[in-house]
Length: 112
Image (tube, rainbow, N blue to C red; front, side, top):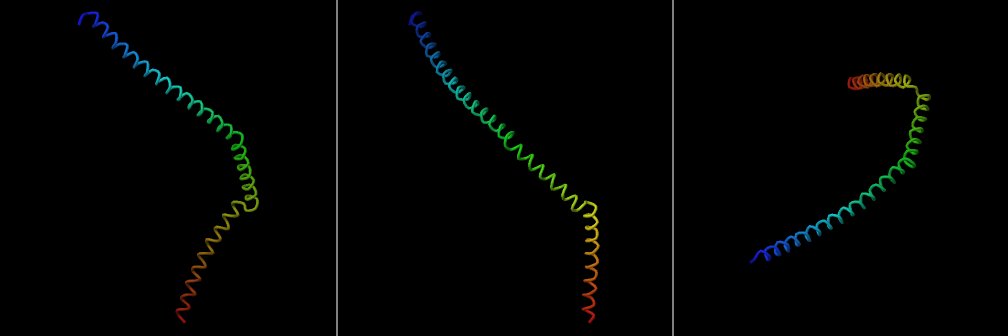
């Protein structure tokens, strides 16, 4: 094999390598294009979600909060916290007295 043949063979191998590189580059570009499309779709979905949150969900949450505030205000006027606490203390005392009386009645029944 002479020098020219060796050079031609080397050039041929380089040509094949360049073809494979070109194919790989084309494949990579196609993948990137697909990723760009998916990214665009994702961005569009994110914008839609943000608009939905701002225009639909946020006002509804505000209405819920306003309703909650209104209920809490009415509850406070109907049963002030200190009144509720006093009633809880009275109920606790009454339960203790009822238990004691129940035990006493049970003992009296046994004694009869």
